[in-house]
Image 1 (tube, helix red, strand yellow):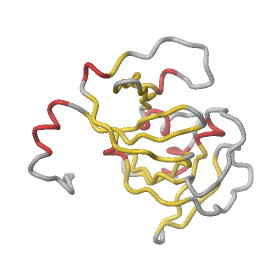
Image 2: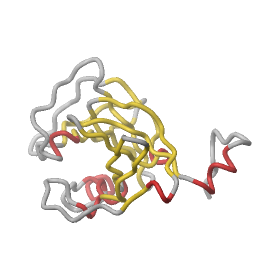
Image 3: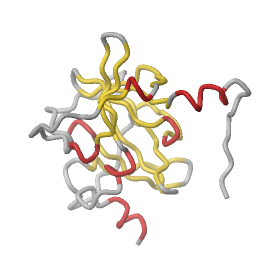
Length: 166
């Protein structure tokens, strides 16, 4: 049984008309994930490396007594060498009751997209597997690559869910 937190009376009308996405950047591209999967946003801090972990798993951090894995999305999507600066953040996610972090270059805002603003993703041979895409969100001249963060983080290539369940 789950409860919805931080619900304002005005949220009910918007809920039926659109979905909210947290917008973040990786390199020159803007991505979006379902805001309901986001637990918190933290400044980037040094992580503890884990031996033999894939390169994109930066390591783990201690989040108020819970040890959580941290994935660097720039490395995961092969978008060049990550640069950690004052804009770099860790988005703390809650995926199926599992807590994990993902490092992104920056976050910008929360955007509400209506179904007609979400277009299907074209098939492209890119480093980003389109299986993990919900589609492309368009707002005026802005385009967000919408990521199905549940599918991505629970995929076998990430290996996070199996390791966490053990």
